[in-house]
Length: 188
Ligand SMILES: CC(C)(COP(=O)(O)OP(=O)(O)OC[C@H]1O[C@@H](n2cnc3c(N)ncnc32)[C@H](O)[C@@H]1OP(=O)(O)O)[C@@H](O)C(=O)NCCC(=O)NCCS
Image (cartoon, rainbow, N blue to C red; front, side, top):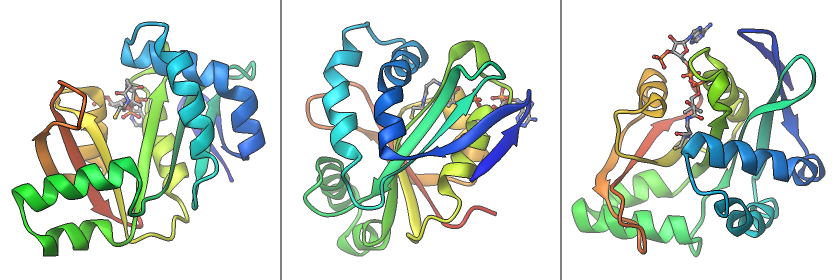
């Protein structure tokens, strides 16, 4: 599927092979967008490649008019045994109850990463990426985690109707406070 977005960016679905080929550029955008130290890219590369193999994996990318990668998003079907699933379940069981955990976690798509090159922020490209990624996803919910706001990412998620699943949550090994947000699919 191909979408157009403000500024005439081309937003397309990627195959695993295309994602693999774009990985260095994708990680450069991730590091720039998140303001992480450059070494983070090397550390993340094997994990992003392993994710391609997960059930329901899908990815979208945005290209400028000269075919330069300017944004990407990916995710997959969440399931028991995955680190993120287990962390979120632990949090929901601790702060809420089993029924709430089951309601959110029994059938969801994990939005794992969404990043736009900083010089393209604030023009609607993130929303186009997210809508294109989620178009046709079969799961009942989409879930994500994001550092506690306020950030542009927060504005995007709230605008698209994401609600709180967990707030000020600490994933194992990370001192930062995160929110876990979710909503039903499909998006309106
Ligand atoms: C989060 C992120 C992907 C969002 O992408 P983005 O393109 O900057 O954001 P959006 O698509 O939401 O852009 C909407 C903004 O563009 C503006 N805009 C301009 N023209 C627009 C249009 N035609 N359609 C929609 N929005 C438009 C909106 O007013 C809105 O402004 P606001 O964010 O100040 O409210 C991006 O900011 C990013 O990479 N951030 C750093 C990394 C990050 O936090 N990733 C998520 C981690 S969980």
